[in-house]
Length: 307
Ligand SMILES: [Zn+2]
Image 1 (cartoon, rainbow, N blue to C red):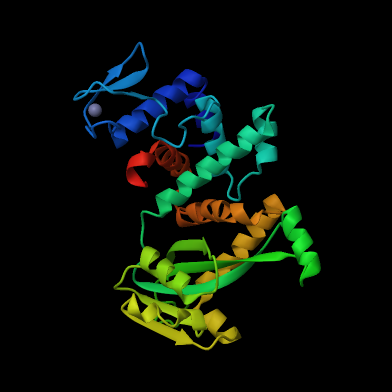
Image 2 (cartoon, rainbow, N blue to C red; image 1 turned 180 degrees about the horizontal axis):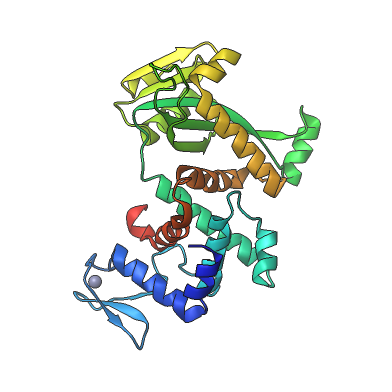
């Protein structure tokens, strides 16, 4: 999908609705009342009816678009803008492009799309050899936080983000050349520096047969209990370059990308922006298919798969 194809395939609301219907039918409609997956399409009502209990499912219900009032074409345009550009687009810019009056509804829609991206990536656990480290992301502070900070120390709040990267061996044994392969990344805002939080993170995101590389941080003491092997190295410039190269490249790219578009991000929304960054990073070889994958992510049965 590119802009030319988008204009041709989605000229109006009807074409977007029909596409969304097909995506949902392909993924499977699940009855909220009885769990049945067999449905009939009621053309006149533009709804599905459960073959078992007659319960009806609307086009948007159960998906990320549930209760959203914006036309589906605006959602499609948002997904197009978010997936066509490598870096992303701000809500302000998208509002301008969509010629939409209210900033808030565009902003909320984009966060829903980011949520869909994050939930899609949460379906995968990292496996094999994994680099793990933390990065500090500057975030914007609320008025109340600012008052507290004035009394205390520092002027900006920093969010602690755990970054994990699945990496294959870095050096080709024959040529000695560094390979540039790295598969999936995950970035998670940490609530604290406690090892309990790190343990939960490892349990939820990393396969137990994995080998994890990290520095010797005290919050990583228990990681070995949840994975096959945990290799630690004292943190230095050399560790950064040799042992944990991918996480550091990802951290600096994420900071540059987020800062370039948004300037300031409130701490409570940082995870959503990181979700978008990782979703696109993990699909960096998808090319033109990214848009189609995104429509599938938004059409997913959220109440069923994630709650
Ligand atoms: Zn039913």
